Image (cartoon, rainbow, N blue to C red; front, side, top):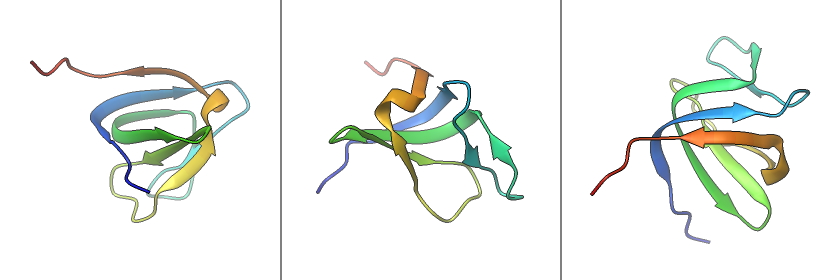
Length: 69
């Protein structure tokens, strides 16, 4: 499985969903993260966290990132 990453993204999760930051706290907004969508899941990399966290793609409310031409 090759994931196509969106880098330097802001990822907002739906209320009730979260990932963990570098201190282990649950957060629902990731700034400057990476995200890739595959098979109904969102793979999220939070800055300074060594693991990829996976949530259902329906848990992602919004992703924003700079356009790269």
